[in-house]
Length: 538
Image 1 (cartoon, rainbow, N blue to C red):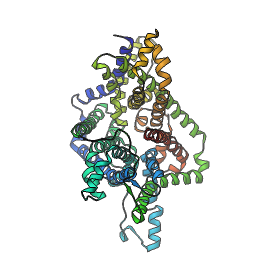
Image 2: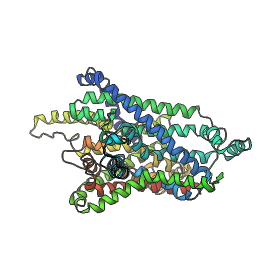
Image 3: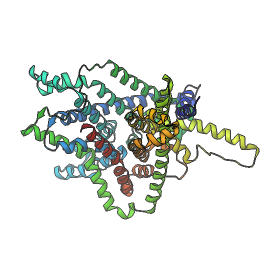
Image 4: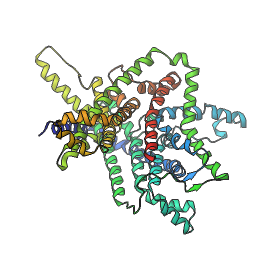
């Protein structure tokens, strides 16, 4: 076994170990806490989770499919701006948008106060108003943040389709709407299902919004079981149920992809326009885009800016710099380690000569599908075992390491690497595809070994992909909340946990600067994606 093979397999085993421990723990014997939950509230948690996923998927389709069709096929006022601007809501953490809309739409909020003033309503009995702190309200909040996944993937899929098929349907007397449902949407079914699978996983992983809205789901059940009952086994069993749902979602996505046959595809992205909208239809398309962007991004960001200005003295404090440094330090460590690991694994895939060379990468990337709360439990299992072994080993001496691994920031860093390694792997792997194998042979003919080939030949050509991978991992680490809440050391705050604490206390105004910082940093990967798509289309 070569050193590269040993390193790649070690990374794959190390990063997949938490998932293996979680599955093993979830299959263990009787747990009184889990039995009690199973007999009382667990089925409500499961049904709420499924209903929430269904609601988010339906709302995402309603929002994103028309937007994707407009951006791919139509010309209307403001199209070039909306094409990239409609992805901005991805930078907005769901718990922030949930708080803002709760503050605006609650009984004591400005919207209902104005309505009571205008119409002289005296009490809630005089009128009906949408209760946002409900499961449907949570679905709306999450869909406003996650719809860009479906929008981006569906728009790209439509642009890769041959326009000849759409034009043929028009010659057969089909209207644009009929062509959409009978031609465009069926041909893009695989891409749509893949996007919906991603949205369903992100919805299941959401903790902060459902926790703030007091909607009991499997994610909150894991959190409450661990911190409320201190039962790691019961939390692992609930996590096992979530894993089952995740595997079913991924299996459905793969089956749909295999069953989808596209008989004609474009070799590049289409920049042509099929429909030039005019009159009322053009302005209706522009208005629809404006409303989506307004409610999903512009209004929440505007409210945050208002909070930051009005409460600047309270929000701007030395604590902001402390928590920002904590977040930056962990994000820098994780992004650097994840990039180095992905370089090793992907380079081994390139030089390997057998079919199993891709297995370490698949093992290492398995953690990306884990929700933050599930990931935290998965990481605690092996780290707690290692801590116990270390304490037993040092028991003969006077030194007592304590919770050296599970009680320090090491647990957070390890969890983040397990979760976000797949992002770095994908970015580096995509860059490696562009490097011709002939360069490797030329390097070998000049007497260079594998390490020299990697450092002198590959690395200079991979710089852009490496930077992209590091930035994407960095941003995800800055936004991660559930794993940080469960794994952070005592009295250790990041920007995400700091903001969430104030959101939970109905005082987001006092953390508005921290929230704005998270949102603004989250815009970086969206800029990178947009630039990459523009260059790809040229």
